[in-house]
Amino acid sequence: MAKPKVGLMTFGDERDYMWDGYFGPLTQPRHEEAVGYLESLPIELVSFPEVARSRALIDQQIEDLRAAGVEALFAHTPCWCTPNLSSGAIQRLGLPTVVMTSTSAATHGMVGMLATAGTLGQVGVDHIRVRADFGAPVFEQKVLPYFRAAAVRARLRGRVMGLFGGRSLGIDTGTFDPMQWRAQFGIDVQHIDQLEIVRRAEGIDAERVQRMMDWAGEQFAGIAFDGEKLTEERLAFQFRCYLANKDINAEQGLDFIAVKCMTELSDHYVPQCLSAALMPGPYDGEGTKPSCAMSCEADADGALTMEILKEVSGGSATLFADVSHMDATRGILYLPNCGGMCSWFAGRSDDPAENLARIELRPSVRPGGGATTYFTAAPGPITLARLYRVGGAYRMAIIPGEAIEMTEDDLADFIRQRGKHQLPTAFVRVQTDLDRLLEEFGSNHISGVPGHWVRELEQLCRMIDVTPVVMDEAY
Image 1 (cartoon, rainbow, N blue to C red):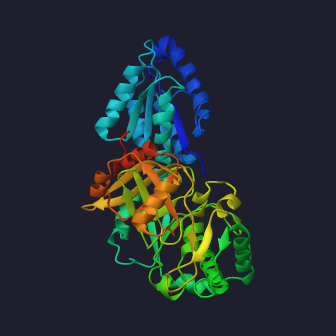
Image 2 (cartoon, rainbow, N blue to C red):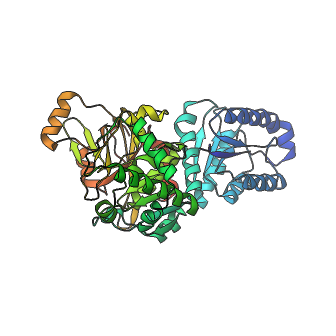
Image 3 (cartoon, one colour):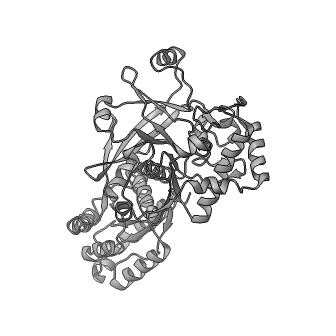
């Protein structure tokens, strides 16, 4: 995934006599230090050799930054600068901006930073303020998350979600307003009948299907053909549906998708569990591929949450699950999916073979038959999240946690309460008030991505007019 593209403008005093006599010798070396340090970060930096201290030069740098398509601005005020020029340039660019000065007491940088940032606050320009020296922890803890959030904000605009079918099983929390998405996030929605998946599936080249079947036979831990629900013919048709969906996505330029599946496809054709297992990951039987966030049951807000998590994390695989059970004693969430969860989470490996060797394909209980995936998500850090609305206004629940392997005793106790464990599942230990989660959480579905991305999500929510609701005792 592309790194956040960040523009650097270092601002200075427009008065020649003050620049030449005092501020110039202080500002120029600090500007060069900024370029060198920012180039060492995991961002794509667009910078200039000159300090911006005249209207003409500021105009040119703004034009060049726009042409380069930067997604965030690093406004460097190492010394006193002319504040109407610096704040005016930032306002004209209209980008999320970090306004930074050093801790030096000899530069009047604090004065320049506050004069600039104070103006931005008055005119309503999104920014954060940093007073630190290059290499300080604040860059990892605050600046980089802000840049990542700004990049996601920019990249969401113009994205297209493919919505296959409509509301599934009466789940209202999966419905949404496409015009609200267009206005708030800049995302378009392409409505497609899910029958198009079936129609296109029938015409998929037989060699492609056989390649997928051979790959499945070699890679998965087992395929429990039973001659009734799970047959080679039905498994092949599931792969046909996956390949058809993959082709539709490419042809129509769909960036992420939500598929209804139940009940028409699950009951009368085949469930789309293999699509749910492979779409959000980086591989399939045809090789490596970009991950494509996919939610089940036409859950649009769930799919958008997955897309945001994918982008925030730099392109990682994402999962989609039900919030099925909370073990308040152990602080564990039981998060299964009814048949297909992203296969990457089985082993968290870049090698598909390591992940798929942990997954069984078992007969589906749906009338259409076919396969469901069975595995327990491998242990590791995870960020759970969910977009939902209260009175029409968006919130995002953000829950950092740790996917765990259940002990034999804990799993046995869980099975006594729940019954036979037979679905793809993540067991996630969280440090949150589960009563608060129960009271606030606005959906039966949840999404997740490896790693901890709380700061990024908080910053992004602020940028896109979503209220972040962090559910963790450490925050």
